[in-house]
Length: 65
Image (cartoon, rainbow, N blue to C red; front, top):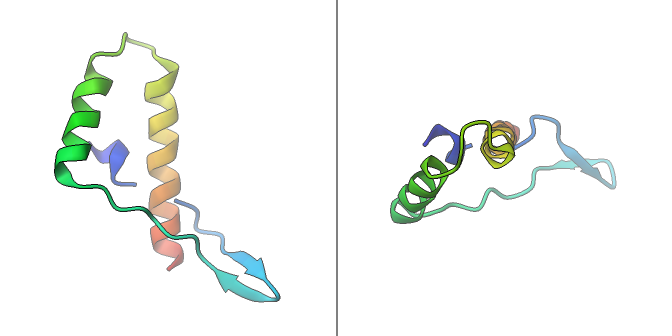
Protein backbone atom coordinates (compact mmCIF):
# COMPACT_ATOMS: atom_id res chain seq x y z
CA UNK A 1 0.00 0.00 0.00
CA UNK A 2 2.92 2.36 0.56
CA UNK A 3 3.43 2.35 -3.22
CA UNK A 4 0.12 4.12 -3.59
CA UNK A 5 0.62 6.87 -1.05
CA UNK A 6 3.48 8.40 -2.59
CA UNK A 7 5.82 12.94 -6.31
CA UNK A 8 9.36 15.20 -6.89
CA UNK A 9 11.33 17.26 -4.32
CA UNK A 10 12.58 19.59 -7.01
CA UNK A 11 10.19 22.40 -7.77
CA UNK A 12 9.09 23.43 -11.20
CA UNK A 13 9.94 26.96 -12.21
CA UNK A 14 7.43 29.13 -14.00
CA UNK A 15 8.59 32.73 -14.46
CA UNK A 16 11.13 32.24 -11.68
CA UNK A 17 8.51 31.09 -9.16
CA UNK A 18 8.72 27.57 -7.78
CA UNK A 19 5.45 25.71 -8.21
CA UNK A 20 4.72 22.15 -7.16
CA UNK A 21 2.30 20.00 -9.14
CA UNK A 22 -0.79 18.81 -7.28
CA UNK A 23 -0.99 15.30 -5.86
CA UNK A 24 -4.27 13.64 -6.75
CA UNK A 25 -5.73 12.04 -3.63
CA UNK A 26 -7.37 8.62 -3.89
CA UNK A 27 -9.99 7.11 -1.64
CA UNK A 28 -9.06 4.27 0.68
CA UNK A 29 -11.38 1.98 -1.29
CA UNK A 30 -9.59 2.86 -4.53
CA UNK A 31 -6.16 2.22 -2.95
CA UNK A 32 -7.27 -1.12 -1.54
CA UNK A 33 -8.52 -2.18 -4.96
CA UNK A 34 -5.15 -1.25 -6.45
CA UNK A 35 -3.32 -3.25 -3.76
CA UNK A 36 -5.46 -6.29 -4.56
CA UNK A 37 -4.82 -5.93 -8.29
CA UNK A 38 -1.07 -5.49 -7.79
CA UNK A 39 -1.01 -8.65 -5.67
CA UNK A 40 -2.39 -10.60 -8.64
CA UNK A 41 0.52 -9.63 -10.88
CA UNK A 42 3.29 -12.18 -11.43
CA UNK A 43 6.58 -11.93 -9.52
CA UNK A 44 8.99 -9.59 -11.24
CA UNK A 45 6.21 -7.61 -12.93
CA UNK A 46 7.43 -4.36 -14.44
CA UNK A 47 4.18 -2.70 -13.38
CA UNK A 48 4.97 -3.37 -9.71
CA UNK A 49 8.37 -1.71 -10.18
CA UNK A 50 6.76 1.26 -11.94
CA UNK A 51 4.27 1.71 -9.08
CA UNK A 52 7.18 1.86 -6.63
CA UNK A 53 8.74 4.66 -8.70
CA UNK A 54 5.38 6.44 -8.83
CA UNK A 55 5.07 6.30 -5.04
CA UNK A 56 8.52 7.86 -4.63
CA UNK A 57 7.59 10.66 -7.03
CA UNK A 58 4.35 11.34 -5.13
CA UNK A 59 6.28 11.54 -1.85
CA UNK A 60 8.73 13.96 -3.43
CA UNK A 61 5.95 16.26 -4.70
CA UNK A 62 4.33 16.24 -1.27
CA UNK A 63 7.61 17.42 0.26
CA UNK A 64 7.83 20.13 -2.42
CA UNK A 65 4.71 21.81 -1.08
